[in-house]
Amino acid sequence: MQHLTAPELADRLAQAQAGQAEQPLLLDVRENWEFATCHIAGSIQIPMHLVPIRAGELPDDREIVCICHHGARSMQVASFLERNGFDNVTNLTGGIHAWAVQVDPSMPKY
Image: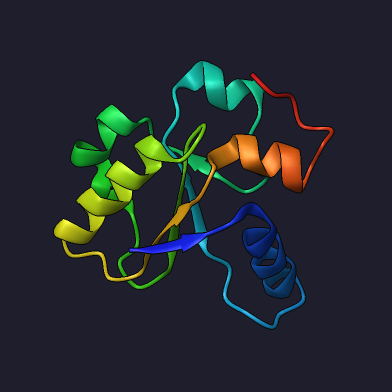
């Protein structure tokens, strides 16, 4: 499993917007209320407990960046995906909280 910091993910997303890199799938595994509170634009949400039954909806030919509040749940999901045949999975270290602190200070924190 790969790991990205929030600033590294921001750079990767900027490169994708500029057409210099492929856009990763941002998989937010937090609960509905957490996602409603804040999320990175373009993220899709599948709560952690639903990932095993919805993993078939995820592309296996694209990088998947797993996101949660602080990085623990997303690391578990990333590990699960790797064990189930996904080859290009990355965990956002520090989660959405790190994104709010290091990339987008206007994002609500909880």
